[in-house]
Amino acid sequence: MKIEAVLEFNDKGYLAQACNFPGVFGRSLYKEEALGKLLEDLKVYCQWLGKDFSREIFEVVVVKEIKSDLRVEDADTDVIFDNEKEPLSPAKYQELKRLALKSAEDFLMLYNSVPDQTALLASPRKTFYGEVPRSAQAMYEHTKNVNAYYFGEIKVKVGNEPDILASREEGFKLLEENPDLLANKVFVGSYNELWSLAKVCRRFIWHDRIHAKALYRLAAKKFGEDQIANSFCFRL
View 1 (cartoon, rainbow, N blue to C red):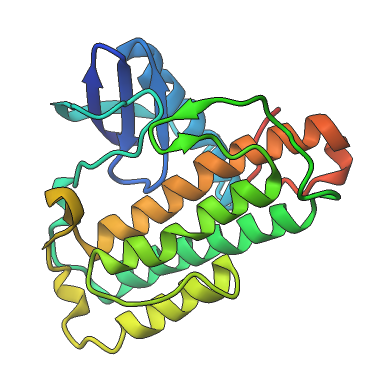
View 2: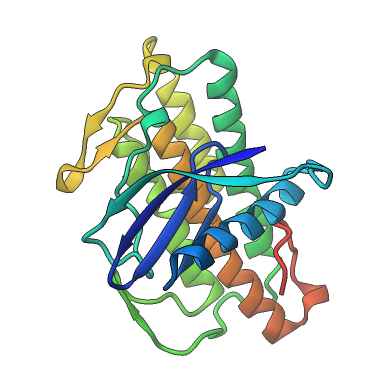
């Protein structure tokens, strides 16, 4: 099975993302290591979705390499994949929606399992958007609050409350009032970044999983692995 990868890079490292498995990624200072991490992340992803690919032989194929001005070592990516500009079939849309909602539901499950959501779990560290969230509550709020941002980039106005799942469900409900949603129109959003419905779904899953991995590992270390819901099937 081929994993079609888009590779972003600069002198800070490499970020590899799978075009045909939205949300799967690998990041490293080195190209081959980033691609190897992508393959390892795919195994976790398949377990999360309950799919048995143990008999499959995977081949990572880089379909595009892009030099990026962003901080690929810790920043969101602004790339739009070629297949995220194509019209969507009803089945493809439903699958992307299902994954984006499952991701939100599983993040909420993970967050709700943390015994003390205000306890500090990580040391102070600055990233491209400021201080990194250090408590479960801060990690959850940061992740939840991209709902309005991402939907807004494709002209869907929705809030971030009452929780990550409900607000995301509301976003899809409002989106589906547009009879042309399957056209998967490309919009020019903030900072001239290109967005489409397909990209929004991929970014939801990707962003959720990045922060869920950090939250799970830090919370399991502090409170014990048996106390924290491993809803994304991450490995410690």
